[in-house]
Length: 200
Image (tube, rainbow, N blue to C red; front, side, top):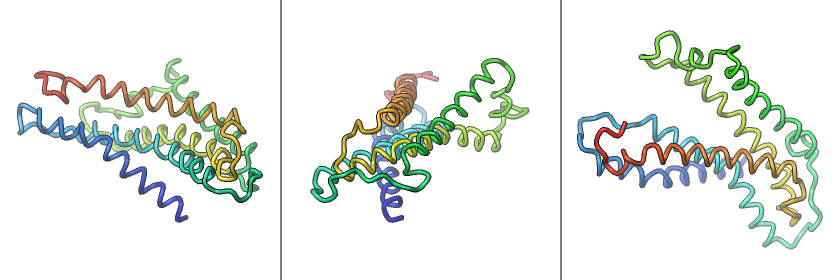
């Protein structure tokens, strides 16, 4: 429990510090101080970085502690549902497939995602749509965290990073997707950050 709270706290702080320079640029370079501050934009940027750090931070911490811990050189295999490599792999794959299936159904026109996210009136904030979007976003994040658990356990026991290659592939794919999404948002909003007029 203490490790989980430490990871949450560290991820929250790291994510905030990483978006802080962009928030400062937005404030300093804005031309009209009466315009509304883009809270949603920075909340989304923070959320992506928070998700990345939730997945990546335990692995980095386990690798560091494993390299400095000479005891228990044999990788420990957990017996719980989320730490057992096989069950963790199955759960993470199911979560990823669930996420992909929803957007595949949207692509085929069977599930109208715009209606789910925006509600009957796109001009007004649709609170249920925010929860739906957050729930969908949490699926790959949870898959990355669960897939990373066996990797963390192995690294803490001074095992190899590549002891669970399929788990590692899932983690890398999810982290790459999140990083690409975050980078796309930064590139798209960069003119606003540097004060270009009519950047929207």
